Amino acid sequence: MQEEIDKRDENEEGEEIDLLELFYKLWNKRWTICKWCAVGAVIGLVVAFSIPREYTVEVKLAPELSDNKTASGGLGALASMAGLGGMQSSGSDAVYPQLYPDVVSSVPFLTSLFEVPVETKEDGEKFTVSQFLDEETSGPWWGAVMRFPFTVIGWLMPGDDDEEDANHKLDTFRLTKDENDMVLALADRVTASVDQKTFVVTINVTMQDPLVAAMLADTVVARLQEYVTDYRTNKARQDLEYAEKLNAEAKDEYYKAQQKLADYTDRNQGIATQSARIARDRLDNEAQLAFSLYNTTSQHVQKAKAKVQETTPVYAVVNPATVPIRPSAPRKVMILIGWVFLAFVASASWILFIKPALASTKERRKQLAAMTDDSDKADADVKSIDKE
Image 1 (spheres, rainbow, N blue to C red):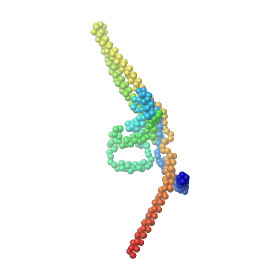
Image 2: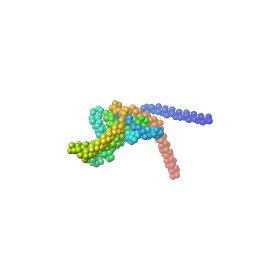
Image 3: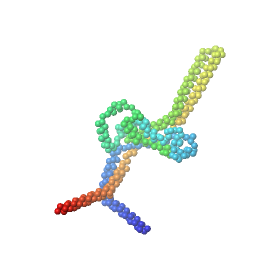
Image 4: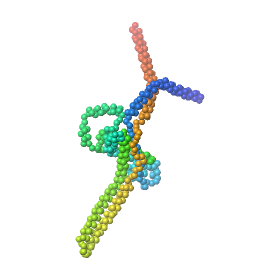
């Protein structure tokens, strides 16, 4: 037992000695490490100042959730434990908050943002979103360098894109390459997320101009509210249109019955025959029936209007869109620290592992070459002796 403890102590001392040895090696080469870190700092500064500034606008939206009165208490509790509380509380509404991110990232929603008018903060120029992304959005210089060969190939390749663009109309079912690239760019810059506990929807819009980001974020919120409102009130609006149609028909029939009664009364004034009285009573009953139908359909119209108002969701904007003052990217300090750290790791790896490994490999090659020369000399001596 004592021997095992002694061996363990010796191993720990050996490890400590090895760590101290590595530390001393790095300390002896500290100026080399400083040079590497200085180079990494320069590269980090170049990278940090080459990335364009990005501004992010965050909007938080609290949607109204309808109550599901048909669900039992036990089932609701189980759904809440399973993390499906939002779906349970949404009732018959199929577009619950968990689907809002999918709505925002869908192709029809993103393509509807192409023609949204925006304005830059510095010079006040007006663009559409697609024009701003195409003309005013830039990337780091190395991106242009990497794309240059493909751009030259595109110039040399023949094509009739101009004729297609002249008569082209946006079709979400069949997007062009440029439209698809625009959709992908917007999908990266316009995102939505949902808090699973509070069901607060967070919408983030990132652009290279703060005013453009704020205007687009406000539009995204309005379009999302409009989409969900149209979906939830679709059935109620259809019922309202049908009720208004029936009411218009009943109104027309009522006016016609009134006109027939009035014409008959005007033509038969002073006539006291039984047939005339029966005919007048019949026309009067038809007018009363038409009025009753008209009155009933009018009540249905009012109820349908109330139903539309009842199903229209109400949204509370917890955090509205505001023009950001400071850019959200690039994080220059973090980029600088990251490059300096990578330079330190690279220099330490070179000093501790790579350089000794290369020196050892070189020494082995020299030894093998020396052994090969000695064996060749020995073979030559043996041959000379054999000849003698």
